[in-house]
Image 1 (cartoon, rainbow, N blue to C red):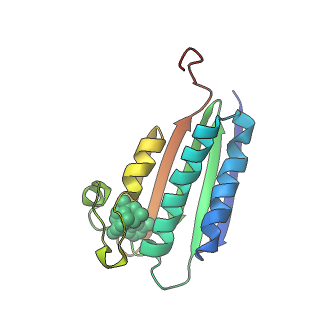
Image 2 (image 1 turned 180 degrees about the horizontal axis):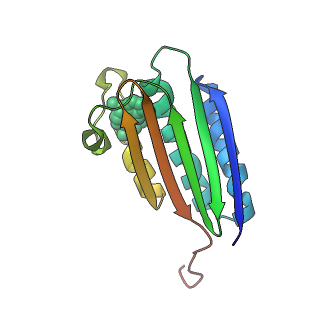
Length: 146
Ligand SMILES: Nc1ncnc2c1ncn2[C@@H]1O[C@H](COP(=O)(O)OP(=O)(O)O)[C@@H](O)[C@H]1O
Ligand SMILES: [Mg+2]
């Protein structure tokens, strides 16, 4: 069984959203993803990191961690912040729900992560922080399609 893993920590400045997207893309390259899969992974990571920056830490400084694991042809990303946490996770996961309507957020971040990845788990404790675990299996492209 093939296995790889990595972990990065970075400051919650918005420039690091791009950094996180690039790291995630670079990490999965060895699995030879399609362009679509690559862009789905980058978008999902970007949504999770944006949430950590905007909702988790709001205006204070904090560290965001991304852990990546590859098991055979499946990649797992775990995005963690030590911010405010989510009081009602099932409500937060609903499409179009946003805790910050004043910022004109779309409320679609979690829905996008769920759609683009095979699975997404949310663990969160108020006052402690949030941990998002996403998995996606690559190399499962059916060559007979299209
Ligand atoms: N890391 C986080 N820390 C605290 N709250 C979060 C976090 N991620 C998401 N949330 C809460 O879940 C809501 C829904 O998130 P999301 O679907 O990405 O929509 P949006 O970011 O557009 O509000 C957010 O508005 C926020 O209230
Ligand atoms: Mg969001």
